[in-house]
Length: 324
Image (cartoon, rainbow, N blue to C red):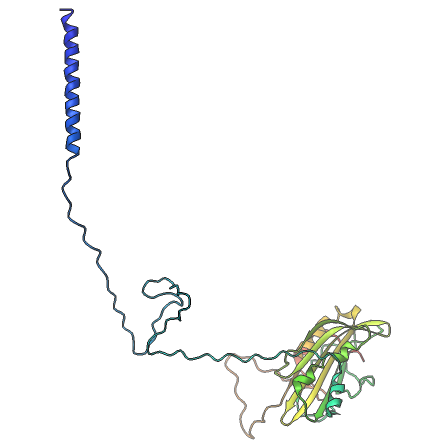
């Protein structure tokens, strides 16, 4: 009994192993059989969107992007851009370039006018009506006679500031120009008179129009009587009807007073205006009423010299003046 039991266990183990092998082979054979074919998937449905377009209306699309795909098309080399049948793109006229004014190499404005045979007739501020000229009057400044300014139209000076040696001042001269000339060509000479000053050094310059009129503006420093002066000088060529005028503003101060006089100087330089008077209102015509809530227009003060000085400018601190 002791010997038979182990042999039986061995025989049973062998039978079990054989049975597992047969089952394994059977399972492999079953997995190799062909699968039942599945029915094909239905094709994706196409969605159609109807867009109503008015006659001759252009479809609204993103520039450079196809309305059908939403992707920017890539044009083949050498092919013309696609166009909509029946629509002709109107040509866009190119804006004519405005030639920039080139500064003249020599010749002041007076020398230019003399060469062209143009007479320069000095104008006085009293009873002058051809142009509206606005010269801001800062607080502490006043009109002064100045024999050092030939043909002066108006001269104002700082009466409370300064360094005891030089008084900041501003001056205007106006000439009627009689003769034929090109205003753009003439204004190109607007820098020369300043550039001829002793030890001149430019800090800024421009040929931008002033109030729609040809103009030159140059700023810098120069030496006079052992002093260094800072100046801003603008020339404007104004046309009033058949007549032309040269209006020149100079604002000068000593360099040690530039900071103290900065507010006044800026008020004069930035507030200076030249314009052509508009047509007078018909007799008896009421003045236009201001818009609701709009502030009332400021009434300018007119000095004895006939130069309009806005009331707001009178409260400005001392500005830079012109050298005599």
